[in-house]
Image (cartoon, rainbow, N blue to C red; front, side, top):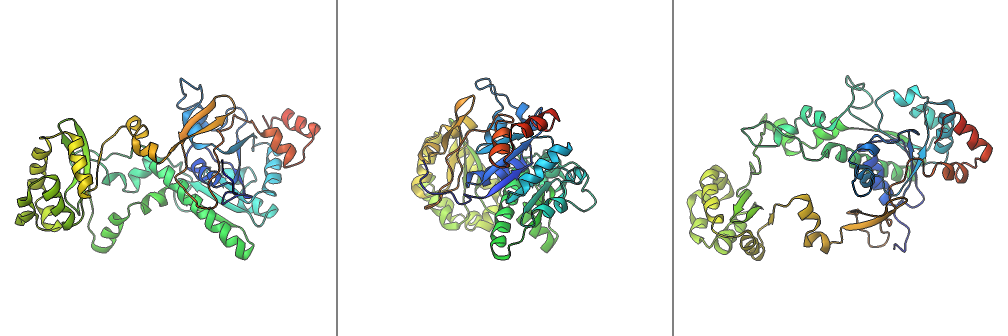
Length: 401
């Protein structure tokens, strides 16, 4: 159990987001100790409550992984009564996070202007597909489409096949991380100015930023980078190789590493002296010849042998694992990356813990994702001071679950 307050202890976040990008943002803030009040449509809740239902738990594993350390309030923001409750909660919040399309919050009288009017110090973070202005602001934003449009997908996959998107919705996740970083920066700035502000973090902008060196290479020289599969345009040898009993990946970027690799891993010192491979640039130019040599060499021994030699020589290499193999690996166990969170109906649920580590103010101990509307009455009573009569009227009006 943690013994010191977490970094964001005392910060209250009103979370009106759903699915992935917004909930990932508030997941990170909740791990850091912020109080997350998750507002959900009262009859069905977050859309992902119905996705990836666990045969063991009878609950959405998708939802469980994104919504630990949150309180669920079943509230219909489309009703006048629900809107009033939101504004009351805003008065007691530090941050609002939402990921609706442009105009949705405004149509419900809950846009930034209305929110800031009741709490000028509020940090309002809007996540969307294409931003709150610009020609595509009204388009829905979906991770696979954004990966395609931004150019990111063109860099992923084998050069002679169609581009592929990442196996997880990486742009949603990265947008949530950028949004969380922006919220932290705005909270820090507010300590100096006392003022809130509006934050706009689109999926499209995030995906274009993730082009990284591919973007700067084009902007500087007009060079369009393409797909190289598991290889690397700028370094060699980098890639996937097959031993007698399984695949592994290795990566080298320096001539010193390659020399050690030839001497201590391959036991082929003459290879390091070959003029075709004397420098990284020459190895890149002669990648096909080098790959052929490596493919034939690695076929001669088991994966563990090659990985042990690489480790002893300080060569970056590792086995290619599926999800089960990764989560059951000694590295995951050694880092204590699997934790348990107590869930109201499912008991102790295993999950991957936060990767953030603090020497003095650790992340919070995880609490399982909430049931739909599990905290509605508690939040209304304890935070807003509503009595039984007020809660009954809100329920009769269809505003709460």
